[in-house]
Amino acid sequence: MSNAAQDPRPACVIVGAGGHGRVVLDILLAARRYRPMGFLDSNPALHGRRMDGVPILGDLSAARELRAQGIRSAVVAIGDNGVRRQFAAELEDAGFELINAVHPSANLARTVTLGRNVVIAAGALVCAHCQIGDSVILNTGCIVDHESMIGTASHVCPGAKLAGRVTVESGAFIGIGATVLQGLRIGCEAVIGAGAVVVQDVEALTTVVGVPARVLRSSPDYEEFAEMMVPPALREVLTARSR
Ligand SMILES: CC(C)(COP(=O)(O)OP(=O)(O)OC[C@H]1O[C@@H](n2cnc3c(N)ncnc32)[C@H](O)[C@@H]1OP(=O)(O)O)[C@@H](O)C(=O)NCCC(=O)NCCS
Image (cartoon, rainbow, N blue to C red; front, top):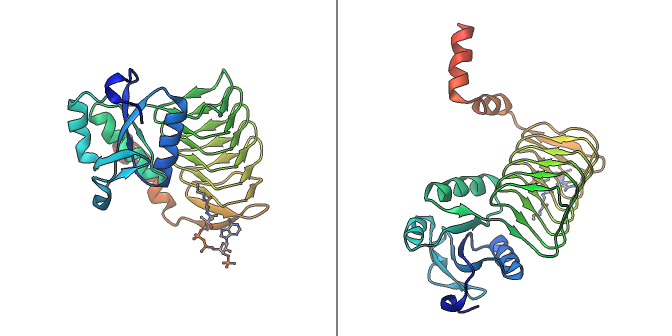
């Protein structure tokens, strides 16, 4: 670890001291743009320990104190899409700037746009005009081909391949080694099983597996979920109209 007093790079905190946290630490050290000064993790058994030389300082409740000490930058390194999105919101609330962790061996076309709190692991390829949303993970060696859109807090696992003009909606999970053919849409919170080859659109909250991919399960809560996705103000208007 570099000496904090002599290191001019901005300090940053990593939220999540599990396996993905370890990967994100490695990315930040390789990229050399920020100085990782500590982890936060909700598991009290880890507090006071170190992982790969970096101290685990406490849980998310320590974030405000760190912010008060002048630490401005943070990244959430948690695999669960919902928790990652939630923690990102809490950190922004606490006044942190959410940074991106992009491995130097990842290859991003010049026209790619990135949100905040994005993690792009070693060897990932992201081609022309892709749009990558907030809190997305593009994991080791994945391929995201031209003009694809990857929605907030989704995860493209190691070695997964998305052909051109694929849309991945918010919170979706594309399993390790899966393939999605060109132009398809993967719905909100859908799960694509490891190694699947997706040949048609996948509905929200649906899990598909196999080659070609078939539905393993589809959430019975789809209507409830769709309702939840309507902003409260609009819901009031729609309810008033239906009376
Ligand atoms: C798709 C997945 C989420 C399903 O998990 P699950 O709900 O626990 O499903 P189960 O293990 O109960 O399996 C249910 C059935 O689907 C089959 N199945 C599960 N995953 C499969 C896959 N990836 N491909 C083909 N069939 C699969 C099982 O063999 C089982 O079949 P059966 O009913 O005929 O016995 C999971 O298997 C998967 O592929 N996860 C992705 C893991 C990954 O990519 N990790 C990388 C993290 S970085």
